[in-house]
Image (tube, one colour):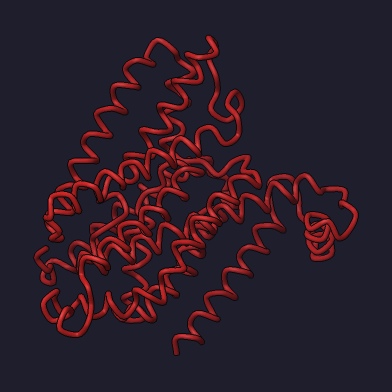
Length: 345
């Protein structure tokens, strides 16, 4: 059943990606053009007439799918660790750390050059992603350092440290925005990054998402059994051979890496890591052997579907805004559905 489900989801990802590549504001590309365009990207053929349009769509599709898969998998891992379906990647301060790094990069570039820069044009293509990635991993490193150094390794303590890290990063981000108030374009660039964007993605962005996702997904075979056993409680899991501390560190590192890669290239994208694992769990059950692989493809389908529907409908909302509008009611639904099933951390 697991292999069949994953295969069906994978086919859906491919079909949805081809549909988005075919249709867009700049016109329609036929199957032959898609094939020849892909061969040209791989260096195996001559470019088609609309090669530029095809490549813009291709990088966008790869980034959107990669971000959806990364955030969904990160959410599934954290929900398994916390044993609570309402956990999400923002719990550990990763998203807040990425925001801090991106804001600092925009402000530093503007001050250093003495001019006002637009985040998508004035900065080097990887300046903001690299800074956001560094901020996310920096926040994670501090959480892990405190967790390991203090010897307090309970789930509740980890959650509180994550909340504290989010507050610290949020305060520093607010300071940067305050310093940038006199620079309209800088403030605008920081705010726009916070809303998220999939526009004008490039191969460099794809590489960041792909590298982080590959490393994060590599942990699935080693964590799926451990997370299932942790659901029984740490004491019982230890009797069955699970080392809770090792699992906690692995989940925190991998989920942070996945989130950092996604957020650093697309900005803040809310609710994907919360909603997708929950709906997959409703359909397939709580077992992580089924849940984790299915969540990878479901996350890509979810975000590709949202992006495709927005383009077809003519909406011009930023993805972070649109997902917040969709995700907030869905979150309330999950909250009501789980109100009698909360497990104390």
